[in-house]
Image (cartoon, rainbow, N blue to C red; front, top):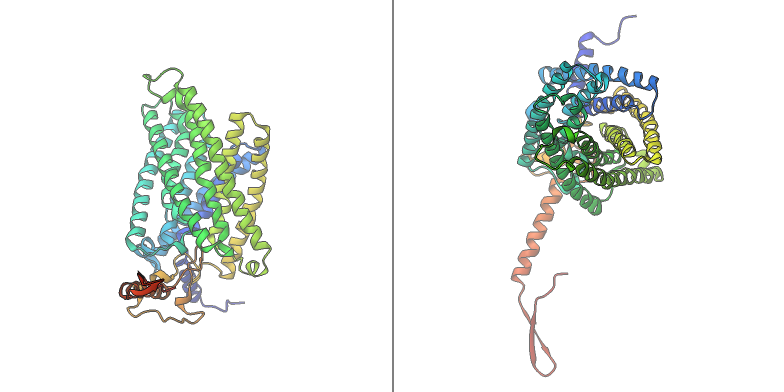
Length: 458
């Protein structure tokens, strides 16, 4: 039976949907690669799981290449524009996820070849590291510059994705700590170690500053909408990956520390790394439990449950938490803690179930048109962007389903509209004018004592 839709119509619909296949799709590749590395790390000492991880690693390479190819198609054959992407207050934050997906591949290569690999693998990973470092530095500067230049963010729009532009640079430290064992014969081992530590410190410092803004946003505006709360898992990542970097570099420190330092310097550095890791682990665990509590709040509220729809930010429940699992296992080895070892294995099992669940919801959302559809993705027009497309002011009362009523896709925070912000600004200026022109009122107290006070407007 012939198809009811002509081929041109099917092609048109496909191209139309590809236009909205945003960079946030790379979060799925990040997560697939993270799960593969988690299984190959042998936290759960199982040969079948190791081979499953190796298979997922190869699958992730194919999937990553497919996503990159589809982005070329998107910008070549649809109405999507790279300049629009880089100037968009939401999608711009997700551009670096393409590099994060590449980071999982670099780490995966080491997990496959192992520490006893031939020198050629060490050279290849060294080249990958420096290329990744340069791209991460450029992307972080470009994305943050574009976001700062546009000034289209507000406290109400604050979400964990703001830290993503610095995330690839931070993972330079994690990558360095993983592949250093293959660089012991390389003259550039010391440089790689110091660059890795520098990038890790920079990334974690920026993340801590973003934590302050996030907590302020939560105190002022409350939790994000139900469907965006899973994105809060992103906060578990920076401390966890910093633990991996600190412990990994401290183990290799005897091979790259300058000979001018005392002989006991590696032991001192290792002790500091372990103590710092315990501190950072508690921070990562707190953010994980805090996010779980916000999701329990959703489950207990019928209205919030009805709003619990899939968005690509749900992948934050996988990739950052893989770092938490690896950090827990590394800390368990350093402390000789059986409890932490068991906990890391439990997290692995939980992550496997989470990955399958989120992947299923992702496929379901694509089939149903909940994503890759006009107005439903990270490239949609949000309230702070209206000024780009129209000169007149947005009406004070907007219809419920008009373009002006669209909240941000990620994290869909109940942000004020441009009109409301302008109105509040006018009210503040008017209040200031009234305060400035209020006359001083003289009042008599007792037997003729004269005092003056400002008339209160409250």
